[in-house]
Length: 215
Image (tube, rainbow, N blue to C red; front, side, top):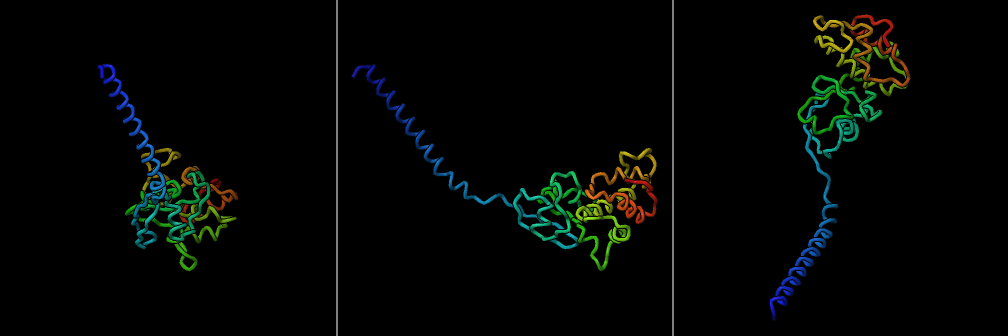
């Protein structure tokens, strides 16, 4: 065989080998697809204290804190409204601070303390704000009420600690619950029924101040 024939043979062998390897790789990938599809979703173990009770739950890592509360733990007092962090119906207290539970992954709440509307009080032992909402008719349909109350609890604590808001005129002075402060601090909680005047009255009755005309 001449030199050209040798080169041609080697080239053919290399081409054939490459083609065989490529086909084997495709077949291997096709065979692996069903196995990958059958894998369970990624799970995470969350340990946290909810309303004073320690809980350990295995959840999909995509699960929100809201869905963990409602679907896994049946704490349905916390409501799902917009599911986009715009209405405030899902507000709970996380380590004492108010958060929109629909925007927070459950795994982010690992080793925290969560308080829901059920943890604030029940019919036989209501939180002062719960009692005030009843006394002042601070609701109509009641769907946003748990979030309104949890938010108000967090808001009054922020005020007590002297945390300013965008409406605070003097950052060097401890803010008071004026009409402007109340409107600004509760602006993340919407009421489709428009019960804002009664909500404001309920909150200010507990705070011991007057926010006349707050909306």
